[in-house]
Amino acid sequence: MWLDSTLISIVKETKNTWKFVIKVHSDFNYNPGQFVQIKFNDLIRSYSISSYGLEGNVFELLIVKLEGGKMTRYLFENTKEGDKLEIKGPLGKFILPETITGDIIFVCTGTGIAPFRSILQRLMDNKINHKNIYLIFGTREKKDILYFDEMNNLENLINGFKYIPVLSREKLEGKSGYVHNQYLDLIKGNKLKDPIFYLCGWRDMIKEARVNLKECGFDSKKIKLEIYG
Image 1 (cartoon, rainbow, N blue to C red):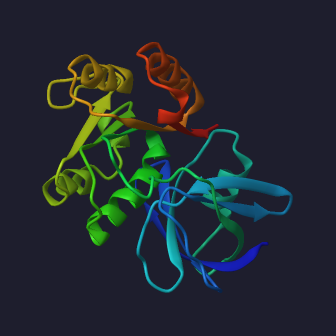
Image 2: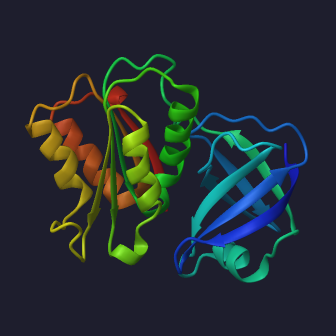
């Protein structure tokens, strides 16, 4: 069922990645990690919810403008605050288990950080019991980093949470590289206890990560996927 909603705010997080804040005109309850669909004419696209706990049936989407992307061109070039939108959701099962018994490793590129931000906010707000949590975030350059200050702050607020940003085309704190190096280092260092891996972002990253993790001996049930593009 499609739900009537209103675009109440647009915030430019980076040049090509914007935050769209949406209010639904009916009850709207979701689990962090889920996504919604947006419909415009005959176009339908899916976007992960990047917020948690906002009042008034309000949620946020973190969207990157894609070259040749019809929906993102519409959202970036033709929408404004106060516009009406049709959404469907919440959808998806990219969520944490009810009881967390092992370490959690979030691996993401670009706007793939969106569902993990929502999950982390819930963990903090609701003081949910958990083991160690690692967020490995990859992008190309410093100007493309999303929620850098917020994630660093969450390291101080969430016990056992470690934020690991990495850049492929610049150095950050003296380091550069790819997300794959980071989770493989954790595995090789025997730092993980009964982990579950959550992979979110571009298809090529997820495909490579899944192959790597299976070669390291992890069962498919321990590898959760949310693919963009």
